[in-house]
Image (cartoon, rainbow, N blue to C red):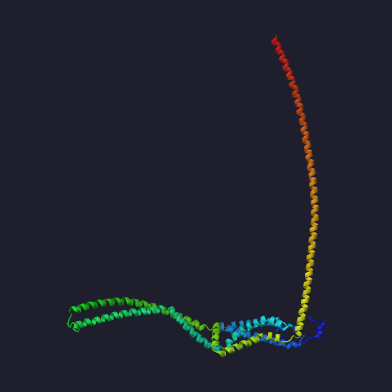
Length: 432
């Protein structure tokens, strides 16, 4: 935004609603343009061209859709939509083109927009050409339809060539019957002449020659009856088949004729327009002039910007964009610094947490070691008491065993002495 000092240097000028609307159509920023009265007319003219291009696009879109659907409602809705679409495309093309200090940079930057403008001119100009040359196109459509009908008829005749084959077969069968009839009639005349005596024999009445010719006549008559019967049956079948095929052919011709009569849509008109351009050089020149006119109209806003000098509005626009870029860069740098600080704090926090966990882990390890030592001491003490108890019990058992052994030894000695005494007594008695 402009500050107070800038507002004093470039005072605002009140714009009328018409100026405001068409200046907005040119893609200019109104809050900046208000400070640049010298640029009003330039952007006013650009805005009018952009607006009128949208209007023409709406009209041509209406013509194009009305040609296809023959419905005012559908064509009207599409025409409004098409006009708005083309208007905002042009608005984007013009508003995105900025004046640079070097012309070649502007030209290089505007080339894609000029190409897009040419494509839009083609799209807008084509339906209008069809409407301007509607009468000539209708006359050409009649010729194209007739030509298409002939081509379709030739194609259908090839498709139903069986009809001609059946007709030829019927003609052959009829000729066969006629030939037999001629032979029979000739032989009949000979038989009559033979009976009347007008033959070379000159004999009147029914002689041997007459009977011979009469037998031949009867044989030919039977052949004729048989051939006539067989051929007439085949001829009748062929006629029924021909009638069926001709009905199918007529229906196909009616369908094709109806389709060709209806084929006067957008594609057919474009084809007719192309044929007219080939045939009529005057019409071709006029069509090219209309196309060039629309290209100039569509590219006029861009050309005006390219050919015009850099004005106060362009300076203010560049200044505002530069200030905004600096401001956004500062914010970006500030955000990046804050992000880096935050990341550093997170790293420090992680390090402190790791250190604290390390200290806690060392203390825990010490406590675990102390607990293990205490447990080991208690286990050793318990083991010691257990071992002493076992040693004491073992000592008592040993003493018990020793006393038992002593008693057993005394008893054994007493038994031995008693045995000796008894043995001595026995010996004495035996001696006596």
